[in-house]
Structure formats: structure tokens, C-alpha cells
Image (tube, rainbow, N blue to C red; front, side):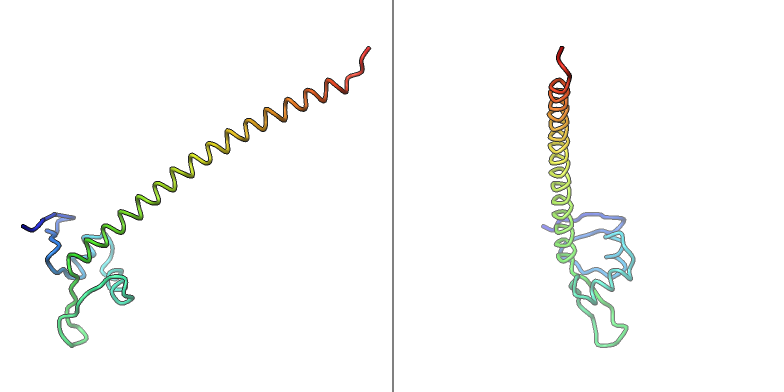
Length: 117
């Protein structure tokens, strides 16, 4: 049994091969970007023939792996952002505490400096 998903008007299965144009449509990028990723080795593909203009195809499982990597990166970034927000909240609380301490010290010092009598 094969899982079939429709993404951006392309019927996607992990066991099929996709053209550069279809991959671009699936990922929401330009075909030029996909071609650059293939040329740089970031995206694995096979060339069907020997000629310069031989068609290139990307295996569905490669695209699925890319989706999973992007999902993981997105989740990791969101977790880091949440952790950063919590740290910022703690820092803000600490700054408020320090401001209160500073205000208390100033009030004590001003009481000490007032002349008695």
C-alpha cells in the first residue's frame, strides 16, 4: 500500500520520481533553486540519459526526507525561540528585582544622609 498525498496540485507518493518543475512546485520554490540544490549535492537526483539536456528526476523518498528535515529544523527553531522568550522573561524579572533592590538601597542611603535633629 502506497501513501498518496496531494501537495500544491501534485499527487505525491514516496515511490515515484519527480521532475525539477514538480519538485519546485511541491517545495514552493523556483525550478532554478531546485536545479542549484541538485548541482550542489543538497538534493539527490538521477539524470535519465547522457546528453546535456537529459531529464533529471528526484526520487519521492528524497523529497520526503527533505520535508522531514525541514519539519525538524522548524520545530527546533520554535523550541529555541520559546526557550529564548522564557530566558528573556526571567531576565526581565531579574532586572525588575534588581531595580527594586537598587531603589531600596537608595532609600536607605538617603535616610542615612539626612541630618538628624
